[in-house]
Image (cartoon, rainbow, N blue to C red; front, side, top):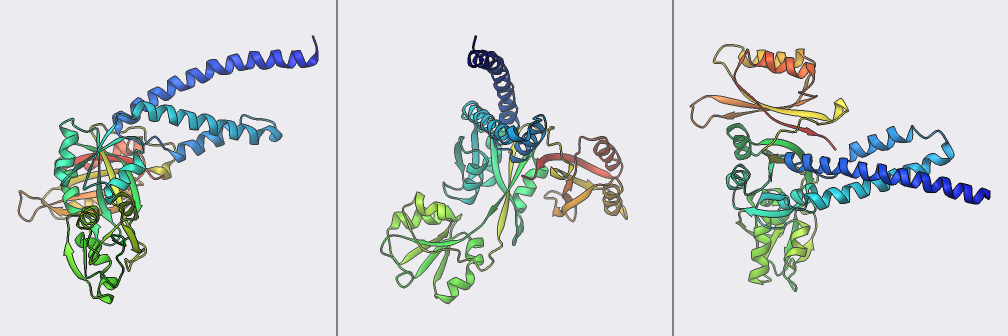
Length: 362
């Protein structure tokens, strides 16, 4: 047998073993897909992929070969994600508004291959998951300039869904109109009140009248249907493509550092949030006893256990006058020993305490 034949025989044996291992790996990916669907997690997890590539490439002793192995493992990860996408394709995602709304854009980023179901308000979208009509719901929780979305924070406190994913979406407002329209033909702009406020300087400069709509995408849809060159919508670029509108001017909002954080809610709590402490975050809502220093004691417990708060919000309780509940996002792993101790200690000073979510920063 020639050296070439010997080499090919060895390759055949290796390929046979690799095929067996590849099948086992894809079966494990099936289990990952099941978990992601149950917990409302995205297929994409860039931090996890980077960890795999760095860790596995250390197994390669030859520096000459390592770069080829990295390309090889990236291809395996790509095929694994394709397989997971096929398995998760039936995922039903609720959001508010119509196609092109920023919630729709966030939902598409989280779940590119899912089916999307629009609802007219936050509560109906949220309840669609509680009732089992949809698997997950994507809702805004905070805008970088306007602050928290109070109605959604209230749903977090009152409801029983869990947050397992948070995504920040850059908000860019654009002037959109039908073909043939221009800044000089436009007399009136339609949009959500917040988008109108964010673009107020541009609107005043051109002396446009304003009419409020439920959201930016509905404004774009209405402008498209009216086919009137004297009206325009302030909305996302995605809506221009969806509703066949021309982009009259891009990025008309005065604050160019504007983004909204969207949370994905599901019926299950994700307990496997990451391997790096810096990536892990959890969310609590709580009420404190009506005693002097109760809130201060709560915050001291969080800090004394080595946890850092990302933000803290207070909201009035609907059914109790002059009583408030608190929403807090904390860096760290709530399922660690320190996290378990934290929850035990918080229960001694909180009337109500609920863990409502975990998420990773990607």
